[in-house]
Image 1: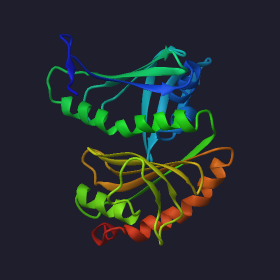
Image 2: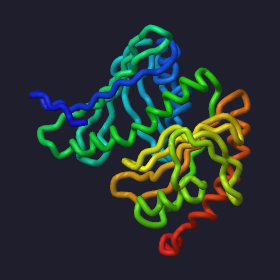
Image 3: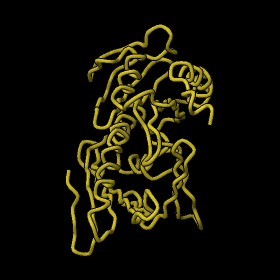
Length: 273
C-alpha cells in the first residue's frame, strides 16, 4: 500500500475492513477507553463538559496523548497527536463506521500527516503495517467477545538475537515454530497453560494471534516489539474476556512474568549498566 500524496502536503494511508456488529457496538469498541483497551493497549479517554477531548494510550509504560478533533458518534472519530520522533510532523487518525446489511459494519481508517518531503513516508507505512495485527484482533474481539468485560497484560523480554532469530525462539518455545492459521495447539511442558486456535500469522512484521480457551477465553498476541531507536523485545499481549477477566489476568501475570524472565533472561551487559 503506497502513501497518497496531495498538493497541500497531506500524506495518507487508508485501510477499510468489515466487522460484525451494529454501528453502536462497533463505536463502543473503537471510541471508548474500555473498548479500545479490549483489543489494543490500555487506553483512557478524557472528557470535558461531557465531551471527549483527549485520548491517552499506554505502550508498555510509554504514554502517547492525542487530541480529539472530531466526535460524531457512532460515525466519525478523529484525533491528532505529535509525531513519533522529535522533529517529525504531527499525525492524525480518522475512524469512520459505515453500517452494512446483515449486521456488519465497514470500519475505515485514514492515517495522515503533513510534510513537504518524502522523509516520513516510510514511518507512516511502517506504522500502518505494525497496526495490522491489532485490527485483526479488533475483528476477533467483535466476532467472539463483543461487549464482554476485558483485561489485558503485556509481557516483554529482551530479544536474544535478530528479529527473525528471536521470532524463531519465541514460537519454538510455544511449540508453534511452524504454525498455520486454523491449527489447534496446546503449549508444551514448561510453558504456562495455553491452548486454542491460531487465527493470524505474519512475518512482516513478526506477529501471531492465538484465540485461546485455556487458561480462559481470550487472545494471546505474540510478536517482536520495539520502538525507533530502541531495542527489540519478544512480546506477548494476553487479553482475557468475561466477568472474571480481571481476576484471571491478575492470577496469570506472575506466572507469565516468571516464565519470560527465565526463558529470555536479561543480557549480562544490560544488567551491569
